[in-house]
Length: 267
Ligand code: ADP
Image (cartoon, rainbow, N blue to C red):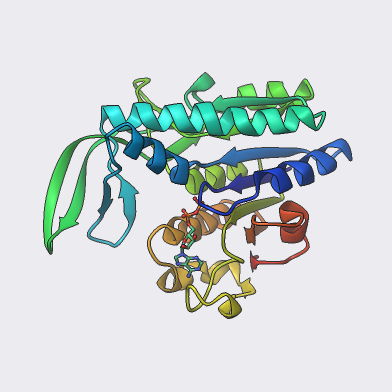
């Protein structure tokens, strides 16, 4: 089983990702796709007059502050436009894909975090009314049913809180939790960069290999949102996934290239 997470940043070629996945799926490989949608969510949020608000925690992690209205815009884009766009691509390629969020069947569950500590103008503030959390539990029953029926699951945040409230969760870490729960052979984290760069944005500074035991030491190279990918990789390998690859989803055959070791391989 391979878990593929494809990001939501500018430049990602979803046609290339879907074509590659469809070919491998038809060859008998079992795959699950997890996707993001942050770039499009930002655009739609601006257009709807509710621009995105990003907050940075005291430990340096950036996340989207998700009030109720933001959550609804987030769902429109992630569960709607992005998810159905990918499902449609796969259906056109002859793959019977089913798109679900982590809320459906409570595939992704975690604690609802209503407040977030954020650094603003050098001061730490507590912001309330947040709908976020981290995936702590993956309920694989529905996924197993889909796979057994020959359907390719296409999953996206939000997740469900233990009380059934929709929460915005990081897609990379959700994919990592899924890969652990399914005992996947590999987790691919595909984005609009060649992999983890030692000197971002210099693409020639690609880090080709990271020993699994060492992955947290590489957090220092990742800025802002890339940190979540490194953290997700650490969680996946610590949970027993043998290979995590940060790969490029901008062109070619992104899944096959990553599985061939192009990108940053954590193992
Ligand atoms: P996605 O939505 O595609 O999953 P993110 O925007 O969450 O991707 O994270 C990937 C982004 O992280 C890259 O587009 C890049 O701008 C940024 N980044 C920060 N530091 C690094 C780094 N050291 N190597 C590669 N990318 C980095």
